[in-house]
Image (cartoon, rainbow, N blue to C red; front, side, top):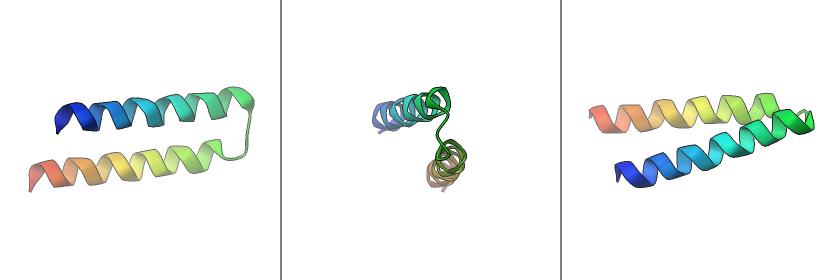
Amino acid sequence: MLGLTGTSFSVTAMVLFTSIEKGTSNSSFVFTFLLKRFNLLQLNQMS
């Protein structure tokens, strides 16, 4: 489970950095989505 989480996190991070490099307006949205997703994963692991 932890490995799968790490993989999806890495892929999302790659998409985020790619968006920033391209200077797209989606970068802030992707960053917010990434933070929310990561926070949800942490909550799931704690419970």
